[in-house]
Length: 470
Image (tube, rainbow, N blue to C red; front, side):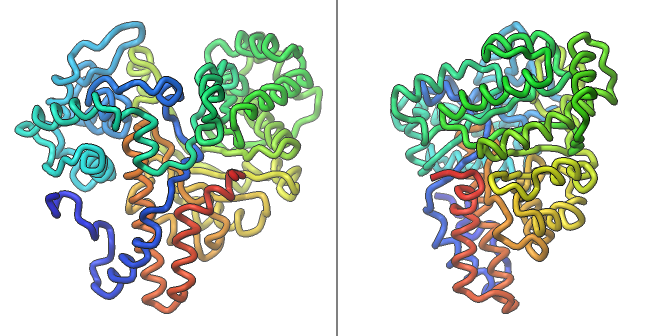
């Protein structure tokens, strides 16, 4: 392999002595199994275990990190093979791949470069940089590999040593693929996650119809607040049958509220009539977060909150192609005041665990680390989205560990739709953890033995503990 393509000491400190410690720590965790307790891979991949169709549909069109960078260079999504709503690709996979490779220079120094090159080397033995000149050769190599059993989805999990992986489904999902996985005895290794945004956010299109459908699925009267919450309890139990140990909530802010019963019902009535205001919709979401915490305290499912992002900010992209294609921007979040009502009710509940994610790095040392350093229920999720990068991980570890400690961190989850990048993302995390711990060892702030224990904990054990995985 070309040593400069994927250097064995990538991301480690430049100082030789510290680098040697980082390398030794990494050797102790590099081959640990991968625990991927939160992500967005397609469960049909594992249920059907059919070959991926072509290199572009594997590396390009599902990866919004890649798409948004190419979009920033003025490249239209049609030219990249992204399917319009109700349409079909306007270019062949090879043509889109050529365009991607011709613009590979845009990704120099980005985490996407690390992830893609790691994936190319690990799964296809490719050790040449992408470019217009290498595009066709690389495409043919990947295409040939995808036709072999070694690149089927389940074989990829085996090759990457994925011990457990969680997908994410909305509350109204039938879980048909997970039913097939259960028949195959794969629930446990592959799990679902309860993502109820479709029935907790009144700004979701068709919200009233969604609540009606939720009532049909659960035999509950979802036009009443009490019936709505009972319906969630029923649905959560259904998801647990398919391995769910966690719920996930994508919210614009960390606001929670604790309203009187009549106030809750008034908000629900307005949501069903379609007359709810923006401020009232925020109150509705905030109350639903408190209700979800209450259910979690009862059934033991871990609650994840992903806040601090404005999603789908390009209306033309949303209308033409759909959501989750890169037009998302971090924004400010207030966790201390936002979570005050929820934590007042459930922060000390014995059976409650809350994992917090943010894109607002200014909250790390000011809010999140102190919250986790006090409340027994609060754990801090890993750097997320724009920040699951080498420098993002460094900032996270540096600002978190002194106040939250290492044992109030949730380890790592890759939160990705790109299957082949999962081992690459975990490798970056493990390298950065070992780099950070090596610096602490070199400054005599922790012992070498402690660093070894922490490296294994943050690379493997922490995620299993945070998500209640056996």
